[in-house]
Length: 126
Length: 126
Image (cartoon, rainbow over all chains, first blue to last red; front, side, top):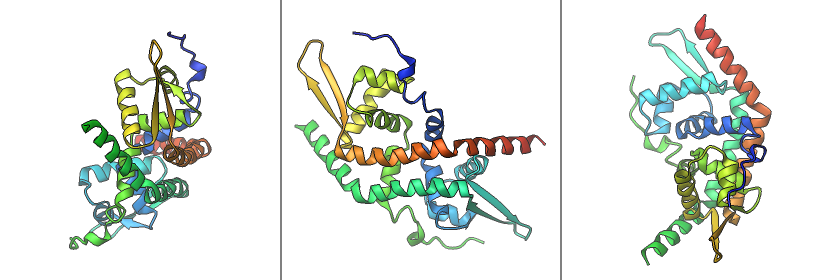
């Protein structure tokens, strides 16, 4: 029954970059921030408001992660109070494009997902 | 300093389906299973081997979630021992296509992400 393990057949191991990209985008705050920034440069307070239910601590961490990964850039203006703006880098823009396809998919298909859920949950009750 | 909250400007709230799709795919096992199944119908043991480092408990849960969301279908063959096969539904196939763009992006761009990380981490040490 148990075939020997064949490491070469491990599809994810053969795509190390995909695994790392999944680790990067498998975070809804990362995706949410990229999505909001795809609409243009934003200040910290604008990001907080447009993402909606994100804590200040989590937003700060998310923006730091995005900057570290080269996806956004942070511009600090030496005014009082300090003004900080965030925008997508060219790298962040290309990733954001892919994520927009995901947005498009969800608009077209999510009602089918919900219908499947209702059917599945209904069948369990029978 | 603090502008009043303007709920209508909340981009994510105005796309409820996107938020739900993000919740769905912001899970690396979900994405990994969809990716493996995009290469064709698989038995449970094949999925386990090809995903690689997933526990049996987590794989079972992931497959159940995917089935509930209408993205995969489970076919049970009445043989001994029971043979169970999983495959993408048409809905799962369209989502898998979008995720493939993400795979493509990672192949082309992940080296740039790594370069950005090294630069960021190096700057912190200065």
